[in-house]
Image (cartoon, each protein chain N blue to C red):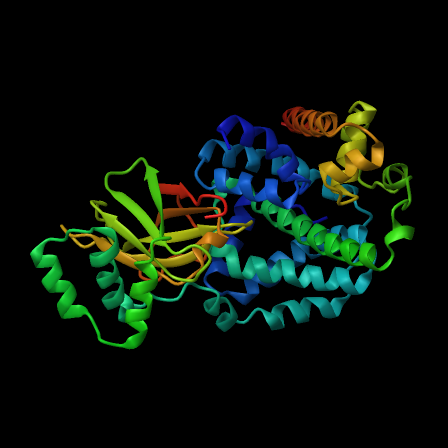
Length: 187
Length: 240
């Protein structure tokens, strides 16, 4: 992945806000890969992943003027848009599939967690997730890479919703703490 | 939803793991709470790390051209809020005179009469707003002045009534936002008129939203999305 600083990205977003298409091209060159990879890994279909990717960059084009640095780095904002749009599309597909195949879909692959963990890339993420208690890791992976809601996760795992909520909260807070420690060690 | 309840939802929100209802409620709170927005921003830095765990696949080269081809300036401009519909000031002022203030000063009444058109559409909107089912959302916040949004539940059209708001300064204007989902929708921009109430016609169906808010934005057209903290905000009563 191309490393870029929040400042560079921020300047590009400011240019996009002024309808500078070259700046959108530069942002695409930085984030097109990660955005497409995320969409592809959630949706598992190249055509849909391309549509979602296009959607994400058009949203950036449209909303760059409203981007506020206080609400996080450009990178975090762009990837949040990418995850949200991918998950949105995935849930529409699942609803559609559930209507068509009411009985057959209910028990879909129970091993989505171990599968996701096996194909996890990126040493940083693997380390950070490996440091979490297993039950927190499970709910984070199901939410982020599986696109499931807390309620769906509770249903899949047969765990009370309140417990899933706690694990998700604790897991993400811990992941953030680990990330901060890692950044301090680099400095 | 209390601040503490909303805070609890931030991690799941950052992971897109909330049910649609919870998501909307959380967003209505985030739109008026800077502390929650900061926490969300911070957690999103952590979720952004997770993207590195997705297996890398390269988008086809043609996708770049498609994206840039679709990103035309006109398309972006079209998404901007429409300019203030000045032509509606007449009915809005008339509606206010009847519905909101109840008793109006003679000078305002004269001004309203001067501005008021005679079109049948105005009369229809007026009677709609005068209906007994009309609801009011009071906006509260940290600034001087007051604002309330009057609307007829289940139907399009309403009027925002603003008084005592300070001049936003320079080329800035106030912008009204309707909030139901991830992104607040602009419901128009306005400048307070000194001394008297300012009326902002709203043509959306307000009962479809969870909350309304007002922020200061660059003029004259406002922003596609809020760029400053809301000064005033209020919740639309559920089922209202």
